[in-house]
Image (cartoon, rainbow, N blue to C red; front, side, top):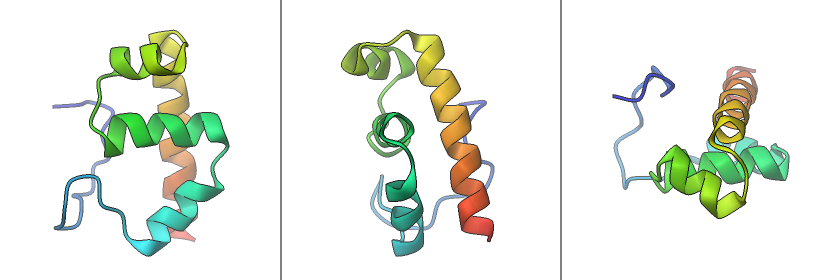
Length: 78
């Protein structure tokens, strides 16, 4: 139900598991972007919880997550 979720299905595996290529691309992201992806997408935490953990507003989490997902998609498609 997350309108910002990726539209391609995740590979079968443990929740939060990443393939080697995806992990490499995630590791290339700036720390702020990477942290948000790890908290929201991999750890399945809410935007509010991620914002509290990082000490930033919820809007910042949403913005960083959007940008991080775009960068990951670009990196994985090249």
